[in-house]
Length: 267
Image (cartoon, rainbow, N blue to C red):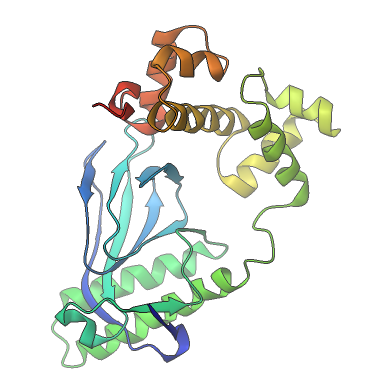
């Protein structure tokens, strides 16, 4: 792959839309030939390749070309609203060439600090795409390049943590203790905050509650144990500290929108 600086690219928009998918709608498994940016305005989505990651509101998902994946709306979340842009780094890529890549390398998930500006640009891109302006392609290129430059600022700043050191320590503690019964009260006692402040930190920096994060991490670990380590559903449930297999299955489907048995290698 030959890297090309984002400041030097001349991107070409193939498709742009802005819509509300059906509740629980899933795309894939699929492989797309181009880059795709997805801005999540409302709702929560899941992106799955070798592992599943949550895509919350006010974030941008970048899907690389030729990557087999599943993308879907979490049906238990609020109504989803997304905007998608399919594009090539340069116009010549539309003939099927995929030997170029962007530099800095796009991150799969970017939490937008100024989500309103990104949101407005995605909406503008969709509006121009639907129109028949004589300079439509040039306008689309300018809007998309502005989006990419804004995102690249976050991608290039990988050395700076996205989250505070205090919250990072809490997340590390949660991930190292998957079988423990951890709550915001547990975190408050261990890290010297009030339960209310713990809740505030999670909502502010991750846009989810501590309970939601803890449960999601347990389900993601369980998915890995079932899919890659060959554990049974019951064994995976016990490993993450849940004795009731049926309750575990309900939680698993709620957060990963698939039954745990679907991740078994023989299925």
